[in-house]
Amino acid sequence: MMKNTDYSKMELTGLPSSFFEANRKKYFELVPKVIKDFDPDTILVLKGGEEIPRYDTDVIYYHFYQEASFYYLTGVIEPGLNAAVDFRSNQIVLFYEQPAEDTKVWQSVVSAEEISKKYSLEVQKKEELYDWLENRNPKFICKLDGVNDVSGLPLPAFIFTFAEHQKALSEKLKSEPLLYIALNDCRKVKTLEEQDLMKFICEATNKCHLQMMKSIKPGMYERDIENIFNNYSSEHYYTRLWGYPCIGGCGENSATLHYQDNNKLMKDGQLFLADMGMRFCNYVSDVTITIPVNGKFTKKQKEIYDLVLKSNRETMQLVKPGANFRDIDKKSKEVILEGLQLLGLIKPDFTVEELYKERMWYYFYSHALGHYVGIEVHDVNKIEYETNTHLLKEGNVITVEPGIYFRDFLLQKAFNDPSKAKCLNEELIRTYFDFGGVRIEDDVLVTSDGFINWNKDLPRTTEEIEAAMKHN
Image (cartoon, rainbow, N blue to C red; front, side):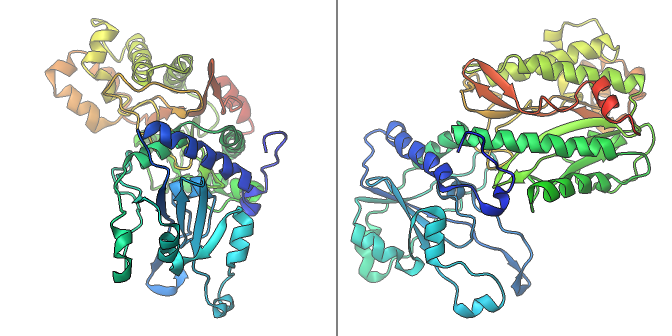
């Protein structure tokens, strides 16, 4: 699948089954290494995602996409399936309830045979799961235990309801949280197939962002630019879902980290921040550009933008296997603090280390440097910035996204705190209250000896951006 793979229409055709065979192989190999004395005579039952109806029972208002862990191991994009992961045979069996024939009047229907052929997996009737477990008679039966470490929400785990005559099966239930930990570890380090796919997604996302750069002008609405991104993605790559709700803010709105309205009229002289990613074959990108609405940076905008780009580029140079992400995050904030001093917004009476320890960065850059990306935009394996133990590994895909934002209420808190106010040039900072924010975000693969920036072809310097927008 790696050499000269044409992904362009795979949103229509789906990824080949070999893609997910690589994921399963990795998981089956890792589980015994993660779980001491693991008994392979174990079945893990997974619950696939369900469609969510609203009000009308025959209309689906929410476009379905598969639960991430279920998709990672099976590749199944249809709703309503379960799966049995057999660690003795290293096989997965799907359980599917084929809709009644009359359902074809209303919607397309996929048969069990078609599901089996599509995913190269055995398929049984959903109602026969417990009989299958009885016949298989494993020593242990498990479900995914735990919570999503990024959101803190409980896992969509399978709920067992054994019949009275299957009481013996219920006695085989075992809680094994490390099965989920091992699955997270697999998802954190991308296979070569995943890397190849995500590279394609990022390169396609670059083209979507470039189209926005070429189209933006004063008098358009923020949502017009969101539409340009989504329409280009749909027209050229057949996508139907975004990677996450588009963040597209002009002027002061660009300082709201997850700004969601996208409904303001864009004015001459404003910056526009576009944090938009593509969802393709259930994998996503997460990319941010910040550009001048009129195609030309002002002196003040260029100074702040250049400082954020400096942080992005210098920080990225530290990315490699074994690097501590906390140290990389700290470096990104130190670059910002030093630059703000040179611009006169922070007083020169303090060392960068003193400013960092005083958390002065928070008032201009109030988020962490990045996160993992994969099937989910904030993929499993939350980066713990408060510890010194989070080391990068070859095959990780992370975002590098420093920023500078001017939020009046947040800076006012600093002005009201004597320990913070003494570090700030309040009079000058107040002239930036209508500035908004700048964020530059790239998706980065950790390689054996460093990194690859998959968004390197985007115009990033102010000169490159202005050249790309010169028609404006």
